[in-house]
Image (cartoon, rainbow, N blue to C red):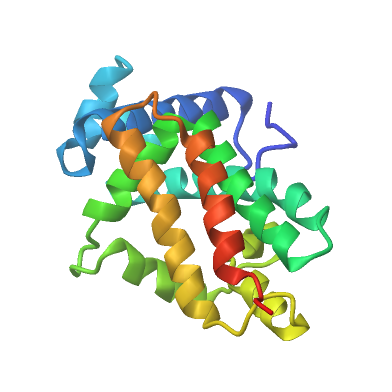
Length: 214
């Protein structure tokens, strides 16, 4: 029987196995680092033959793509209602930060696994994760909830409306992303790190950084 809710058209059993493989890969990448994880190690972790993993994911890259899709979709679904509920740029910026750290808080292993992937991934032709991602975004710009993962529009809107001081939106977007990555870096060192407390400090920092002065 095939699940009507599964975007891949998988049976319930296939979907469950696929999710099990992704969970095992996430745990191993968070524990050992991306370069040390292989299809064979993932199969060993869940006590199945390597061929079982390869049935669902033909390559390691395919498995990594599934992890990235899972993480990004979870973040978008969490963030979208919080952002759309706010009517001001300042409100959206605070909601963006709090929603991000809420995802980190609730999905700590997945966040660390993504941190490891982003830092160590190389494609077959030697490109870094950010280069591959940028090419993918250029070819297929994100739409709907996924588009909300980029805070550039928030900074742009705040500057246009006069709510924010005149500021370089692209630089502020990069600064915010780097600051959020700092929380993940701490999680990679200590899974009990207080990411919610860190997020509240970021809300204050970026409120002060964007506020107009008289």
